[in-house]
Every structure is written in C-alpha cells, then in structure tokens.
Length: 135
Image (cartoon, rainbow, N blue to C red):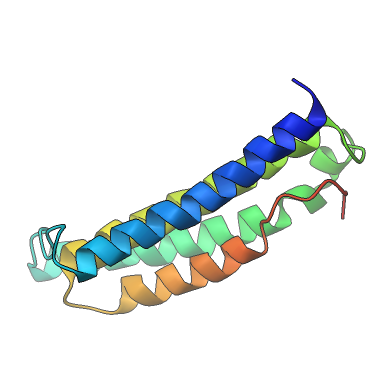
C-alpha cells in the first residue's frame, strides 16, 4: 500500500473515532441508547471510576509521546508507511480510553469523573491528527 493511501486510512480512522463517539453521546443523551445500565453499588462505581482515571493517565501520555520515543523515531522518515502505522497506533491508544470513558460515563450516569476523563481524552485526540511529517 502506498504512503498516501495509508495516511488517508489513518485520517479516516481519526474521524471515525470522533464520529462514533459523537453518535454514542448523541444517542445516549436522546435516550435512544440505554443509560445507567451498570450496577451502581459503591465498590463497582469506585472501580469503574478508577479504571477511567488510570486509562486516561496511561493512554494520553503514551499516545502523545509515542512518536518522540527514540526507538520509534529511529525507524521513521517523512512520508514512510511506518509513520502512518504509528499514527494509527496513536489513535487506537486514545480511542481505547475514549470509548471506555464514554461507556462507563453513560453506564454509571451517577458521577462526573468519567465525563471529565472523556473530555481529557477527546482533547488529547485533537493532537493526534495524522501528519506526514516527523515532529
């Protein structure tokens, strides 16, 4: 596959994450999708909140700093297929946290911690737009 096609695929994946998250949020807010479907006992609620926080604290720095790691940077040059692959990996890392935070927020619907974590991960996703240049 050529480089331009891989970058188009990476950008499509990027916008697909935004679109899917937006659709899930819109349908949940409109009560089309069910909300508050996770058990609301205190121990489960605490565990799910901590999962959101840990995912956010691990995934955001990992995705944002991935392309600056020496091991990754050593193998890449501008306009290479490896760069597109690493951009897709960055988006996948952030997408994991985005969808987990979205599901947990609408599943619990009793606390705002997952919502704040979702906002943090969506803000980080803005900075993961696939670029053909090595930073």
